[in-house]
Image 1: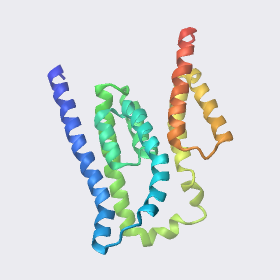
Image 2: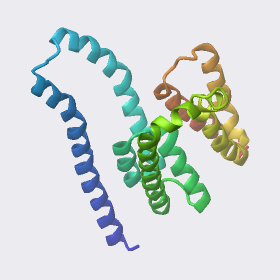
Image 3: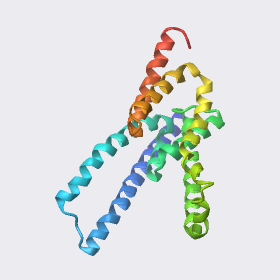
Image 4: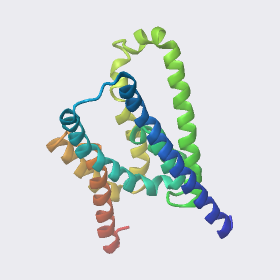
Length: 220
């Protein structure tokens, strides 16, 4: 792609991404608003604040951290698409990383951004199809999903997913991976209920700092 084509691509992605982000926000917020308008049921302001303030204290910092952490990995197109469709940590990000790995491209490159966007789009379509099938077949599959045989598997989906992805990256450079792995294990032992929004930036900073130390010592 020429410089002009790249500039046009970036401008289009950011324009459309912002439009869809605003539309998604309006749609999600309009549901409780329209319900309140239709039924003339409005929560008392003091009650609203009791629920709203703790929520923003926990989730707004996590949201800011996720944007700063995931954007370099997913690229602009992948970032807009992932944040509109949701479910980043346990679906969209692993799909994008796996797709870039299979395609042999690096994050923060134009090739990586295109592969990331395609992977996130494909995962969103597949997710919607699975949800549709689940809604249509919920009565038939509920006994199977709640069976004692499958219940332990569903409780360990996220560790299995990130464990499989982690092995690939740890094996590439175990020297860099050792420090963040050790720090994360210590965090889980000391404070197992810490939010993922806290653990992700801490792990990223430890990885960067340790890689810098190894680079200065010539160990990389």
